[in-house]
Amino acid sequence: MSKKHIITEIDQLETLYGEATPRAITKEIGYLNSEYRAFVEAAPFMAVATVGSEGLDCSPRGDRGSVVRVVGEKVIQFADRRGNNRLDTLRNIVQDNRIGLLFLVPGVSETMRINGRAIISTAPDLLASFSVDDKTPRSVVEVTIDQAYFQCSKALFRSGIWDPENRPTDTNVPTAGEMLQATVDSHFDPEEYDKTSQKRNLAELW
Image: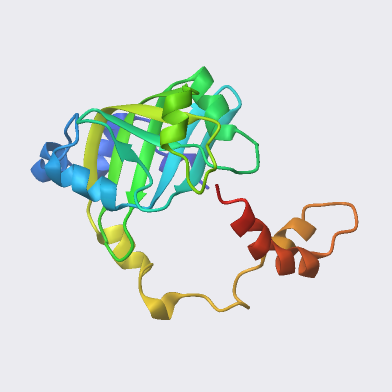
């Protein structure tokens, strides 16, 4: 790739793309109004972006009903449910509290974005309030909102993500077992792993 075609300056970007539309600017606010709150509370899934000394991370989060709890106009919380204990998101928050969230609502083409600052709490009463099926998370992440705005529907329309006809067949996408087999050196049985994964995942949801 020719270096002369690489953009290295902000003014190059602004010349290439032009000014943002006025609505793209005015839709950004520093809190959740009633409409933004309703969107966030309808979202059972979000992507969480963080940064730390070891690099960047973007992790999925999902929960029963709403993926976050709206505490007020400026504060939301979410439980850190059971996972693989890599702790990528939490390690980053300890080192650098900046956080970005992208919310998805099934069947809705707009997305909601929140940028803010995060802390990790282990307060017993707070953890207990997030219990599901008598299982309590080890921590809760609280985010103070700096920016909130929705993203227009172009990306999701282009992807056709909610269109049933775009769902891949079993043969199009490698299974978890197949992907693990490709990354391990020791003997690994992908079929056995896939056979038991659904049962294992359901038992460890919370």
